[in-house]
Image 1 (cartoon, rainbow, N blue to C red):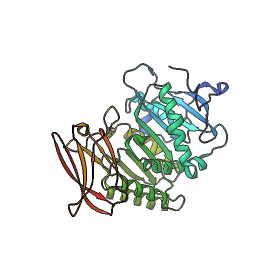
Image 2: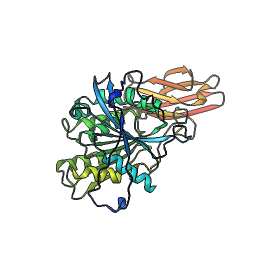
Image 3: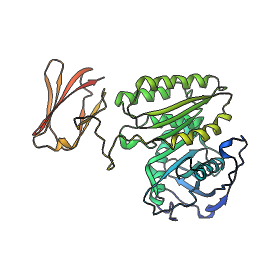
Image 4: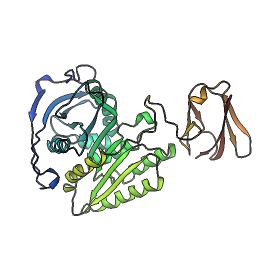
Length: 369
């Protein structure tokens, strides 16, 4: 296993804290899915520095028993917030031993001192998001044999609302940090009961594509949080995003604390056995979503209309936008396989996008809202 974790850049390994330890947390729920198992995961602890958050974090990392840095098939990674405990590692190790989930790397994100979850999962969530996106995950993927398309994030309570907020955060396919999310008892009420819905609405105004698996639960004893999750579920069902796959559940008889572990046990099994709904090619370019071979998104569009297709390379390829009266508003020559058109100054309504080339005749209705 490669040992040069976080030796450069923004993350500083405190070598004095680098150690391996064996941690086992007993299963107190007496569930049959773990009976008779004896797997005891080895957990490596690392203290790391984030220049973005301006603070230290403590990582708890465990690997499959036969982890192979050179294995052709890369490993999925499960990141879990409030990651100071060992029970999550134990559950995953037992499940891997039983063959009910694939082999995964497990990373808990915690703190070397007092928890700063209130800062990182709520009002400071943008900084924490960029810590994950720009600092932590790039270094993990440089040092370990991980699959960037198979990341899972688990968050409970404030961690659950953080998971939902970053679900609605992306502006392009490459910005989707986690294609698997487990949001447990999400604090949708924070800060005003509306922020998560505003973020979702903003996303929907830009794109109807959401290539994510979401497992979302709440305990039946959690009062208004049950209503909040039901409302979120209704919004997601109404908007019916393409490529979006979700499972929402009210766990009967569970309160805010009791819902956490049962959701991890059940959610991790569900989500790690889902296909990753990726609407782009292996080279990272947007996947063709229409039979014409031209991908136009988002539609409806508010500001920037994106057009992706290798057919835009054709000689003499021309792009036109025509209003409902038949008037051509603009006409430009294609400049490559990815084009962006600013339509923010056009009135709301229906338009016709027309693309012509040597062997290409394409028209599509576009809604500006």
